[in-house]
Image (cartoon, rainbow, N blue to C red; front, top):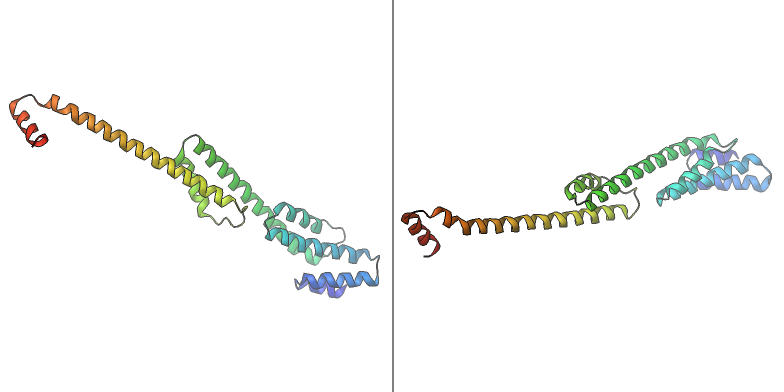
Length: 191
């Protein structure tokens, strides 16, 4: 038991687990060794779940560590630290998901610039803790917005060119009011 506690303090959880298992082999009904062993196993499981972005599973596992009755105090400190980190990540995920939903809604309402104004800061963040497809969704929406904005810009340019051509066609009739204007128009337009 002492060796197991030392191992946990040194953050050598595999050795701690092995030591508590040995303690249980010599004294099968030892409640303290059972609680300590379960705490270490659940802590290691929570770390693994956290690393693969299974934050709900990690939260559940870490709560089993922190809520164990008569548990190993030495593991509580690291468990509480991990639990806070899980909470922070879940808060970030919730905020970022909300921002992506808002950007998607704006894009669907054809408010592409407003949508991009939300996406640009999101894409500038470190999104490693987010679900694997989160960044892809943001990038695809940004690409869709940029494409739509480019299309709108092209339509505006074409409309302006058409209006300019129509105005140009009508301009000579309005401006030509004497023979000098007519002569200049012919020189420029009909060489």
